[in-house]
Image (cartoon, rainbow, N blue to C red):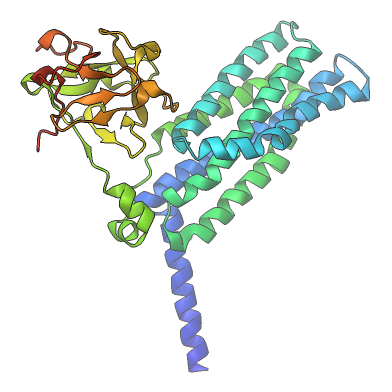
Length: 358
């Protein structure tokens, strides 16, 4: 009996600790953001699932055409679930989810305007809901795989259960019921609320900051340990100015320039095993894939092209094999904000990029 009581107490202590891990402390706060974003986004999808067919009913009484709206919303799960999983594995999940819901917010805001002005036909509705469903496929694939980055291993069962519970309740119960009630008030209302829900979800995900993994976890995992040993460091060039992302922006096409070393994320570069040089999740890139002397360098979404492959040389140069040219400080510039370029390799100091510590 004593053993049973002790086991019960231990079980209760473990359960309490799991609850605190999942909803309390720094990791718990980040999980709360992810959970709320997923729940709000799921409510938006559920709202569209009911309001879409009701809106189609105002244009036609043909049950096949009305069912087409639901089909457009759910067909992407069949078409894109597998490709979405592959693509998400190659992307920053948090950023992908935030952008997906930002896109859906804009899409539904525009759709709401069309509903208000009575300027939307069946084909436009099919297209809109197909895009919403496609985005939802990517969002759901990302949300489950993001959980382990937010909570510890011992809290995963509880966190996964809460996430799945929120998605089912909001997507299949709360959202559809709300969509019907809001549509009864006025047809544009559920779509406007839906747009707002996606905007809220996107904002929550933008604020999400997964805690760094524990060092012991990294060290015990062979693959993660190898990845962790890949250095992230500033790259200092001519006269000690650092390779820099202009305004610390991650927008595709942002210029890469030289700037006073300041330790910001826009100056932290990682030389990956596949030859890419990355900062803030994107790749050092040659504009338009150019190969001519003077072609400028920018930051762009990693895409596997030769314009994003760089080979470190013994003299500190970064050689792009596709062009046969090196990353170059334009005109030996010492003016912060000067965009870098590619130029024939010379071995001179304006093409040497090294860690300040080294």
